[in-house]
Image (cartoon, rainbow, N blue to C red; front, side, top):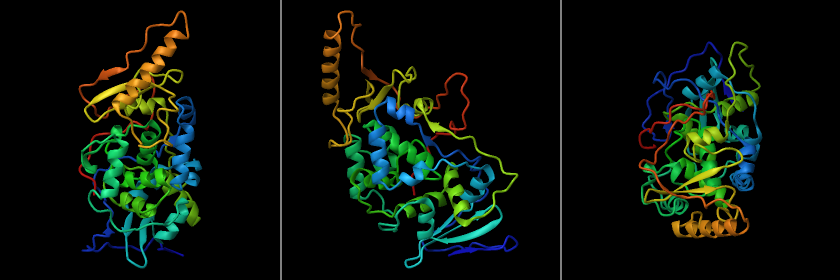
Length: 356
């Protein structure tokens, strides 16, 4: 089933003119591996996003993967990701990588089985700005007119969908930038929102692992290690686990910097640069069951005015209504870190080049 080459056997990678042969990138300063993030169920529950998030996970076929919170290891992850290669042969697509010093070749379908992902959809390379993904991006961002390559995860409006995209970036798409959106995100999002799988999600993961970028993928490497029944190096070091908790979401400007678990204020970005600060939960306003998967500024303002009216009239000593209309001069990623908090989550979030 798997071609595991002896430790003393060396392999060489030949230059290929097949665009579907994606070679690994060694010695390119990729840096230390980052922990694949786990969802923070307390944050999701307090924000009223848990049910929608789990629905997205289920439709995308990621439930088994998401529930796996096994340990991740430094050298296992770094060697696995930096050596990863995807060969999308028409009849027999394969992935190749190293588990420590052991080269392994695995069929794509077996790679999918190890991750718990169904091998459905086309495995062909996603073309630039395909109409179906571009239309989806514009719907979830309330008509942001930028191309996919220039889009940002922050432009996604509904908080459950945005949280899901950050989870993809830091747990599923192994070499992913945590700021830009890409066709890889959208291939998963179309499955999560519609239940359809036009794109082979296993091949999407394989392509992303094969490209340059920050090193994520610890859960993938650990699942592969277990699938192959290979031993863990006793000298390897565990990567401290991290979650997409409120501190992480402050880093992504998902919530305001003064948000707390009892007062979660969502930052909702519009295409013109305006933002609204919306107290969560807002189950009706932000439900993914209601299309379109974004909201107009007018709808949000009207909903918040109605809520403010009721809040003021339901309490005799109510405080003045919250000023939710804000405009930030720059809407970009930050690296917020709560005072006294140290986490391997906070890595480099600078923008990388256009996605391949």
